[in-house]
Image 1: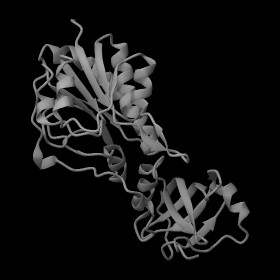
Image 2: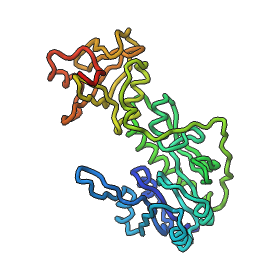
Image 3: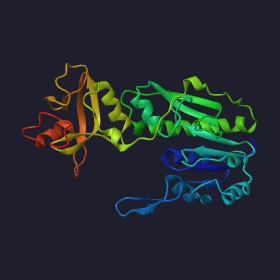
Image 4: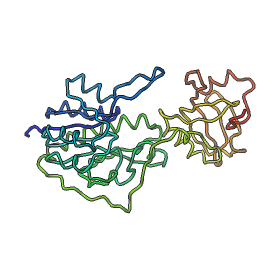
Length: 314
């Protein structure tokens, strides 16, 4: 097939995996757009995005406008004469003028089976909701939030042990494979766009840290999903003797619960905590300043271990 002139736009590790596959595909990458460097770490020094690091390693031109709404940024894009713009977790809105610049338009690689889980956190929300399946959608972008017609989809199961971290890696690889497979039919306009069914649309709002605080009145099954959905960030937590206890791994059981938040048993495997329905066994936990430990090892530092979790005042 003829090589396409492609502009790529993306920012986090998910997008870097897509870009890596695009580079390997042999198409001409005219430029890479990514968000401006952000302060990060204790020193708050500006840190380049994973996409920028990868692009510079391959000697690709990197552009980091704060917005694409201005005439100057739009003229720069037009000057690249792209056939196609590939977008993956870029984080900036593409105005109509940008969407209409590439000859073949703009294609988004989205980490859900649209129209389910439009928005910023589709991976976490799918796990949190108890979905058994997710996947990748290649979408012809329009001016809405993940509302454009579908070009191609690929699915995979959400396994009981999957976290947002493990699912992120699987979906990034699947997204890369799906995009590369689709480039030739996109170039030949052989993928008819299928409108999304608005009746099936759900939204995946950005994760906020406060969501990670576990409410022991909820069902253990729902709490386990939150633990998995919020690993590796922001990490589910509760309170132990007035300080935070981060929970990296847990398993719901159908044991008969006591008062929500009460510790009903401790053994080598973990800590059993009563929920609104069932019991959540904490398997891997961390206190401030410490490292994540198997819960059975963690409890050895506490004699006697508190009888209740969840009170921030100790």
